[in-house]
Length: 511
Image 1 (spheres, helix red, strand yellow):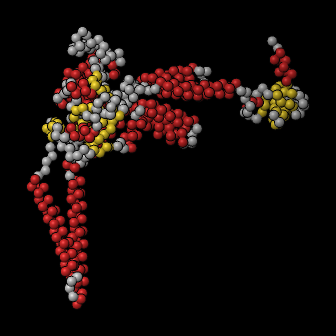
Image 2 (cartoon, one colour):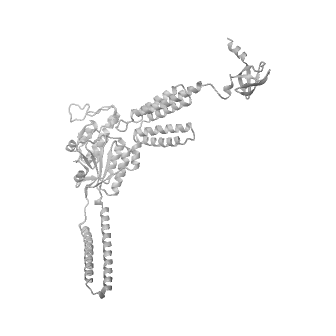
């Protein structure tokens, strides 16, 4: 508990009060002297002006000194640790990497400012286990007392929020809120809250599921029981919240010794906490809150950016935009914009995914699906590669995020939209490839073979023919007459091999 030294306080007050009294007396004396000098004879006018000028200068010096002393005193008061306001941090939504970063920076600022307490006003449906455990460790290691306040009305602290509430030095809730349902959601086929509780409601339901699931539940139960014992709260209910998924309203939580305070707003919370004794890093400390003022900490741009890109749907979109951007750059080298944009999006997407609980088999299937669709574009297989790519893409997208935590799932419509876009692109490319394959050759050597030409002159072995308005050197095995149509059968450098059209027709008519 912060205290003030009476001796120092008295000395400082005496010095400041004495100086102020001196200023008042000096000002009064100056005015008195001026009044007396106004009654002197006119012969003493020069002396009057001299004394008046000296009194004015003395008055200005005293006023300036008083102003400097006042500013110094106010500055000292602002810099006093006792005058630092409490810090308020808003946590709303799922607990994730962005929440860890935000609270870590907020606690560092609170320690630098010697804040009396950090209040985490929380409304969360849960979050990632890794982020929750990191946040709990930061609260336990904090040099500044941390109060977790579930608010406003209608808010909740379920799943990971229950662990965070239990770890706080002061646990408080607003009316109309609730806490609990702390069963790990990764259990998949595990027991639903309250299911198979047995005949005796006071006994926890037996664990079911695989050995891995039982280990996960036991680990979570031991973790929250340890927090309850550390803070002197209801450990039995904490274990039930994990094993059975039970919940409590704010008033029930107060009665069950799950929380310490039930207050309606932050000023009421500050008033109730003033004078409470808490254990901070193993040392007993009495909370001393000088006023009901508090300072709200806003997230910086890094926290906001991390909060956006760690949304699984945003990370998914960034990754796919990056892949398609690089594909466009490789297909059209030198475009630059698709390549630069794609590289940035891909790096941001992969950075976000490494912070999220992803299934690497799903990620591999997504890359395989995209690769198969690209292969279909460059080596048409009449749908085999493309259809396989779309199927692999959809399966990988569904498997990508390996959790069912609210706020960290991929939207099925988003997966369907990207799969549909990819399928449309693949169908369009395949249709264009088929159309190009069926189109006759109109240029190059291949366009000459099979075409009709006209002999420009009579020749037996070699002569000239006209084809597509151009004159070519030609050779034939039989005599050719001027104006006779001939069919080109081969091209050897710049010499055409021809034969009379009648011979070609006869050969074509032969069985």
